[in-house]
Image (cartoon, one colour):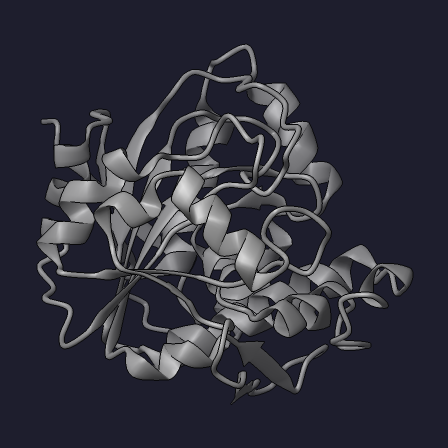
Amino acid sequence: MSDIPSTVFFTRQLTPDAVVRMYEALGVALPGKVAVKVHSGEKGNQNFLHPEFMRPMVEAVGGTIVECNTAYPGARNETEKHRKLLDEHGWTNFFRVDLLDAEEPDLELPVSNGRILRKNLVGGGIRAYDSMLVLSHFKGHPMGGFGGALKQLSIGCASSRGKAWIHSAGVTDDQEKVWSHVAKQEDFIDAMAEAASTVVELFRGRIAFVSMMCNLSVDCDCCSVAEDPCMNDIGILSSTDPVALDTACLDMIRQSKDRGRDHFLERVDSRMGARILDTAEALRAGSKRYRLVSLDE
């Protein structure tokens, strides 16, 4: 990677207009048909970011909300149920919504120099898009330690089969068999990083990232029963480098004096969460070196 650190922008403001401002700070213009990757929220989850918060940003790029089905039981593992939940959560009230693995066959992306995976399976509908905007809710995660931009690229863009493939560290792409093939934690984390690197490569030069550090629960928006936030909100960060962005977010947690910090970090560290940054950097998905630029000063 380049010796020049990646730029990460930061604001303490947490408003829909601030999301747009953080994207504009990047100085990029995403071309063509823009896929906007969000986490639409599992049924019952109280922490996910609602469509009203994302609306000005999605409209600013004329984007289409994209999601994929899950590989675990719930309200999003089958297309019909998932579409119903997208309606219930209000996404279809404001946006075009595309379930990337609902109809199109999976797109197989090669993993270059991977330790675990040789391929990544993403929702086939991704073929229709020229660029991608990744809007991440940075928070904890029960398996990955934390979820940010890299998780959105990996688990988030993977088809249902692809999610099973990553979770099993390349053993099976069968939803019904995946949970009987529990991968070593380091293998699962590396598989996520490898999958993320393929999506970075697919949209290289045509992808941007904005992460919201709020509703900071140790649990992901994929949890139907999630723990309430344990830390106060921090702000919004943006970058064209997902590794730098996730590194900056995690550094802000570590540097915080919030009394919930240790609880959050226990989740991250007990799951080897920071390992994804090292592996993704080694795969040239981005750099851990960054320069933080505050837009509040």
